[in-house]
Length: 354
Image 1 (tube, rainbow, N blue to C red):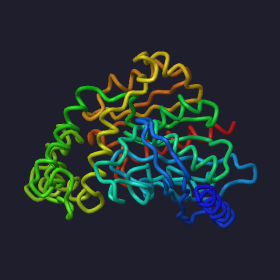
Image 2 (image 1 turned 30 degrees about the horizontal axis):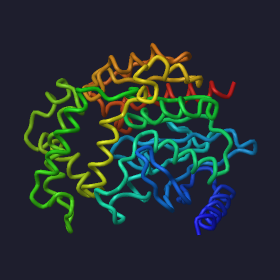
Image 3 (image 1 turned 60 degrees about the horizontal axis):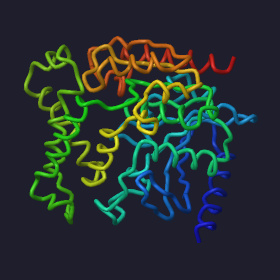
């Protein structure tokens, strides 16, 4: 059965690639017959969902993998993908992915709850590789691009599959989480588990109030003080305060959210190398574009500069924005920050083709 599920998925993916048009979105998934997680646990039939945009060229050399931030999914880049946009479908074929543990991919709410394997960023990348290589039958990518936890994945792609892609686009990036982010994640997770409706993870109804309150804890870390000062009136402030948690409560199961944020919290690319980040980042040979936000409080600037110091071929360009972490991770459509990021990314991707 494992073998057959993989074959069926592969046939479906091949058909999808052949029918993609220049700008249409195509949904799909690949089933990994058997996967062993970094923590030693194993699961059969691990599904990785994805969406594609644009058209794969004849040489199959224009594919770009778009990897999401911690609480995002395969559609995170929808606003930025299209003809002439940040991710230009006139030139490139884009693959947005649901990381294991969320979206339409295999996840805790499928039945295992808190018994679901505590997957890591490296597990995310290994399962993405299987989807891209074994499912889509691609032997290379032009680039991997993503913000925040997407940059974590990009770093691991560069370390574990150094010759599989030409470029890495790392937005509001880091190669590890530090004590600063640990405290944010711990408080966020703790707010969910304190909700009586959570019932130690054995709930029958999603504890939405705890999830909403956890978003309130996370909210001030996403923006700069300068941006928060613009929310002078009660209505815009209250809307911004509740936006993140309300989105989580709508789109996430509590256990899935907790395990996902734990994966980001515990990320450290140097862990397999006895904590030696120089050795870890030294394995990256892909040309890299680093796009930190000038006002980021979620990922401090020193973590982004650590990437610049460790990657052999890296360009470091700060995004001029007062919107903190989200100024890079989720730039406002039509804004100056979006235009700036788009110019950097389009130029970088075009340069990889030279």
